[in-house]
Image 1 (cartoon, helix red, strand yellow):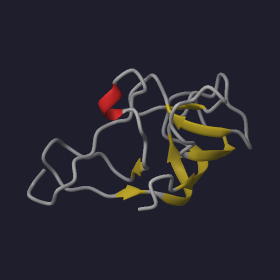
Image 2 (cartoon, helix red, strand yellow; image 1 turned 135 degrees about the vertical axis):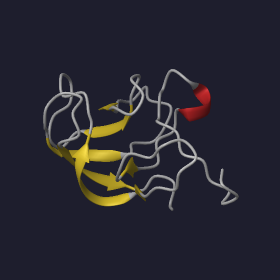
Image 3 (cartoon, one colour; image 1 turned 45 degrees about the vertical axis):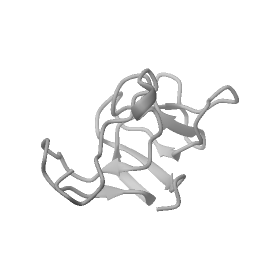
Image 4 (cartoon, helix red, strand yellow; image 1 turned 60 degrees about the vertical axis):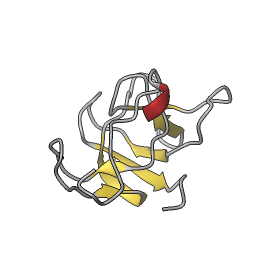
Length: 104
């Protein structure tokens, strides 16, 4: 944790310890490096599963690490974002509005 007290991992609903997403990495962050995470506002570089999502729909960390998926009533964790415009499936090009679910 570089002595800063925070460690960032890709959200993955299949792994309990990293299932809650708090933001989107603004750049590639190598292990042990310091990086920036966007937690609120409009983000134009999100990765989401566009096969099920639609603009206006709520998103949260998905079952593929680092890729957002559709939020539904059975979701255990709060929504991370609202989809604004979809890019290519799984590519960092979707536009979302981050909701800052952890109040960071």
